[in-house]
Length: 384
Image (cartoon, rainbow, N blue to C red; front, top):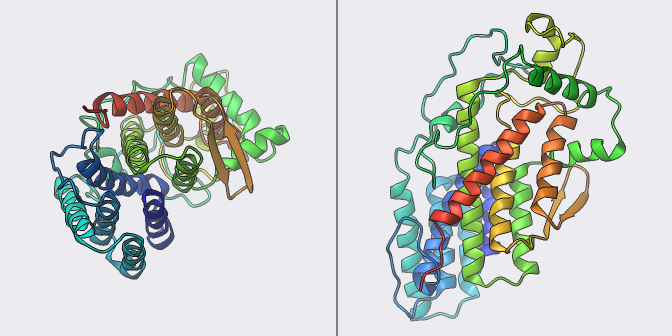
């Protein structure tokens, strides 16, 4: 039931609504949190997420999970009603008719309505504008599309778990006149350009993680749930912890981008003559391997999200993560036995793709790991 509804949520959020990957995490966090509350409200074992609701002991936790996911998705994505209603009918068809189903559906709807009420006026879609003017070291739209700052409201949105969107925002990046900045620019210039000399493995790593990250992660969670034979309670906990932690990682990363506004490698390399650093040299024709996203560099949102996700899985598995993730871009699958190996590859990928400095990746990933630890230290905890 948990993986079925995650698959439906993926189809609605990514397929129908076609939202940007970072925003998708917010909606997955909402759905997963409501489903988690519905399930543990029936089954117990773990503390509910910002709620004290309890279901009748005879209620069906499967019906509660389906009803919660159905109600949250329908509330926020009414244009996908046909898909959402059809999934709900399929779910109920797998559960025996009767009082247990009725009680479960009623409780699941209560869990969803609580979540929806809790997220009113949380800053989603608020009219936030990026007012910084182009200057040395400051972000500005990048070619070829030269788009404005995408999703600036995400930087100021109220998080799901952490206290505020700036709780884990790191200090500023290395200044343009520093040695570290020069090293970062030199590395991405040498390894991240379209004409750079990379190994086949390095190029594949960059392209592997150029897929829609949210879709990759949801599929990986579903595979993990199936391979480990998780029951409905532990599956609900995994999805809720991972999706709320990664949503907060995205929110915090956007806050860092909005706050520090560091320019992207393509700008830094082409305008290196203006940065006041004698160790950098301009190349007006340099292009990254991947297309540069439309928002500032520091910190890497991808690496922050990855750090949060793998930390949650690492904690839930006691270090035996066995994380398997696939990419539609390369048509390949990678399996990681250690969280550190996954973090290494996602950090390298953004450098090899030419869209981030290594410092932005390292700091973002460490920040995401902090948020992942915070998630399980304060939420989704076992109870008597």
